[in-house]
Amino acid sequence: MSTLNSAMERKRDRLLEILSGYGRVAVAFSAGVDSTVVAQAAQLACGADAVAVTAVSLSLAEGELDEARQLATKIGIRHIIVSTQEFSDSNYTKNPSNRCYFCKSELYSRLTELAPTLGVDVLANGANVDDKGDYRPGMQAAVEFQVRSPLVEAELTKSEVRELARYWDLPVWDKPATPCLSSRIAYGVEVTPERVQRIDQAERFLKQLLNLRELRVRWEANELARIEIPSEELSKILSPALRDHVRTELHSLGFRYVTIDLDGFRSGSMNGVISAEQLLGQ
Image 1 (cartoon, helix red, strand yellow):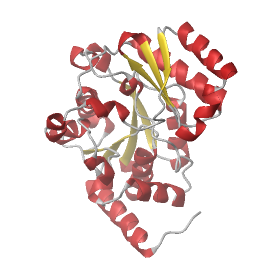
Image 2 (cartoon, helix red, strand yellow):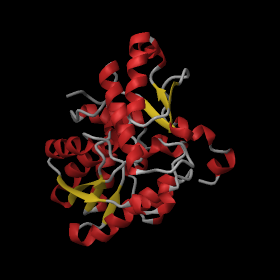
Image 3 (tube, one colour):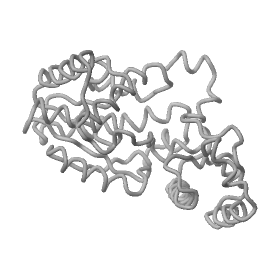
Image 4 (cartoon, helix red, strand yellow):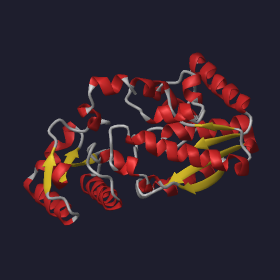
């Protein structure tokens, strides 16, 4: 187990104090580093009064649910799996720039309905301080459903969350961000079950082929796949043999065009098309 400096010890203690004050709490648990740290802290602070809830839908990448189960077992927290139906909402599938708002509204609505059955009084998410500086329309849904953000309340940044995860010996401490598969689809291009499935297949294929942990296959208009990998790894995919292999595989998955983004991997690159007015109005 790693150690914490005095400043981080204070933040750890503050996080536990905040969660203890919630009483009976349900944590929206995706198996990402942020929600895993909140789940661990909730278990330490609230014991049997804490529950981790993982939402399952078509936009969840393969393997994420199994990882959530394993992490919940390691933490020792009660774990519930629920199905969400955001793909039944045309506001979501039309894929506007605030698509995430409709997804989170569906999730928090479902958790609110289940709260009496789960025996909880408070819902908590894994938002951290750094998320406040990004375009996060889902945060508005959290406000509307009175979902608490203990990492924000404890003033923890993403790097500090990772530090806590390492301190608690959580294997996801260095896990790359894993946003939902729908986030790979360009705004205005319809989100469909077939498209998110093909994206998942394409990313798993590329990760195995290139031995990379983090990359994106972006679905642009006209069935175009825009592949983002770290800039320092571009030479791999541009070699003639691999390039032809990638092109053939992605065409077989239904992409009409296959491109390599020379700017490399950028988390949240789809938000580059959002206007300043939209960002200010989030």
